[in-house]
Length: 109
Image 1 (cartoon, rainbow, N blue to C red):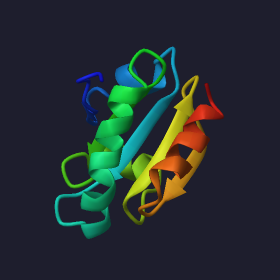
Image 2: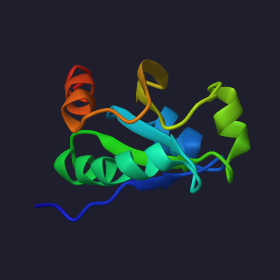
Image 3: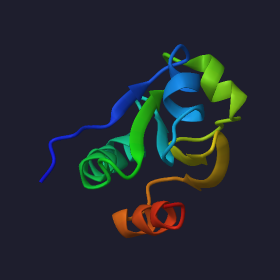
């Protein structure tokens, strides 16, 4: 089992880490005060380990990174966006089962 954890994306590193990534990227937009975010957070961490080397998995704290959150019109959280070649190719809103995330991520690999 990989010990890789989700990457912390921010307004300052989002372009380099996500938009210029050569692998698909799953981005979890979350906040400390969000209950459903706490539910899906451990799932996102598990996926970071499972997809190490195949896809990049990370999180954006919407309170700390308002520019990125506004750019992608994040209005409710958790919101998970899948990026490929710098473009949003899929999105999931709300706490969903791990199988749902894997299915949508696998579709981009």
